[in-house]
Every structure is written in structure tokens, then in C-alpha cells.
Image 1 (cartoon, rainbow, N blue to C red):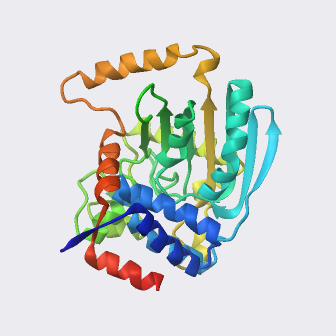
Image 2 (image 1 turned 90 degrees about the horizontal axis):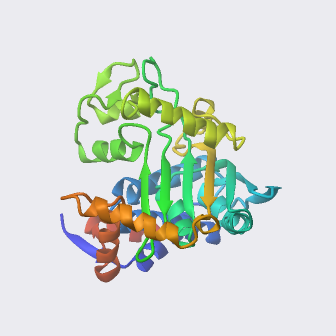
Length: 335
């Protein structure tokens, strides 16, 4: 299969036109297109272009409002809340980031709680800009039920990712983003698209039987939590942080089945920002570097996010690699 290189700006323009044609407002389409491009640019293919079809089918189904304008609420001195109004979480986050950072600067710590939102992207782009502004950041997102709790017999939790970002004295933040399931839903989608099987211990079919067929997992099956009972406990925590605390839906309350073609989840997101300068000043950055240097110097160890940043540098210099057939299809969709 031949491959071409496309600049991030060129790809974002194509995707914004496609999303706009599916009913999104121009401003919202730019934000979501940018998130898809960021994942593809950084080599996170499970959350890149493969997600476009899910966005389009969810918009077409009427399940999500691509023109939603979020409402920001000043809930407390250290707390902001956003009603995404059935729109995408990234639009709500764009509206709530400045209030979050202003509160974190004033109080040393603040939280942003987003409800009635659809999160269908990678989670690390939500916290990386917060760390770039000098804050330590956490994010929690729940989703429709796809994960069988440890010792359970049916899917109950979402893949429920969480992300962490730490500023650094020089260079980009240290960021990690991981699902509480043993595999992200996007990885299962990729395996199905490529005609691959899953390793044993990853998934279950609709009857709760272990399976290596990604299609069976997608068609009413479930994914296992990572680390057995430990991942199951983390998924429970994320469900409480992102749904109960924000006022969002739990994964098992998802109503997407009433909208044929809907793939996104109407759920919630919680983000915490901490200003380390209020306690340690610049000493925090020095201490963080001491730890990270020890990790990097330990043989083959690397920092979380290093691989993404390497992909990013290559893509910014040489363009994002895309199969020519996929690029031609995007151009046709964009008109």
C-alpha cells in the first residue's frame, strides 16, 4: 500500500470540512479535527483517523449535537463546572480551561467538572496544555459499558481512561494516558479493521465467554480490566470521578442504543489542576527532573510520552504518513 505525507494543517483542514459537512459548527469542527490530527501526528492511531467514521455516524444519528455551545458555571472558588449540552467534551474543555487555570492560580488547586458530554478522543491532549502552563494535571473520563468488572459476568464499566501530566523545566511535559481496561476500545477497533485476532485474556463475547475475535468483542462483548482486580478498582474510581461527581451518566446508563449508528458515549470528565509553585516554587521542577533523569539513565527505560513526541517531531518536519487510498477517500469526503 503506497503512503504519502500530509502536513498537520492540511489534514486538519480536510477533517474540519468533513465534520462541518456532517452538521458540526465551524468552530467545533476545527477543535475536533485538531484532536484527530494530534493523535495521528503523534502515532496514536487507535484515536486518530480510525475514529472519524464514529464521529460521523454519531452526528448523523442525532445522538450528539455538533453545534452545541457549552455553558460554564462558577461552582466554587476552586471549582468550575461545564454543561456540554450534549456536545463533545473537547468543546466544553476549550470553554472551561481558562476558568480552571485562573482558579488554580488563585487557590493553588482547582477542578473542572464536565457533564452531558461525548469524549471520543485520546485523553492526553486534555492535560498536556495544562502542564505546559506550569500545572500538574489529572483527567478522568468514563464511557459506555464495555468492561467486565473483575469477578463479574457482564460489562458494567467503560474503558475509563485517566491521564496525568507533569511540567518540566526544559522540553515538553511528561504525560501518560491509559485506559483502565487491558486494551483501549480503539485498539480493538484497529484489530478488527486489520483482520487481526486479540491475544488471549483480552476480550469476551456477548455470552461472557473468552474470545480472541475483536468483532465478537465489538458486537456486544466486553473487555477485561488491566491487572485484574486492580484495574477494576481504578475503573470504579474513574466512574465515580467522571460520572457521579460531575453529574454525568454512568457507563451502564448509556442510551446510545436508541440512536442507530451512534458510537460515542454521553458521559462526563473531571480534570484537576495543581500549581506546584505555591508550595515548592521552582524546586518542584528540579526534583521532578532528578527522578526522570534516574529513570532515563536506567538502561532502556524511557519516559511516558517520549514515543509520541518522537512521532510528533517527525510529522511536523516531514508530514503525517497516511495511506494514499485513505487520503484519497478523505479528499472525496471533503469535496
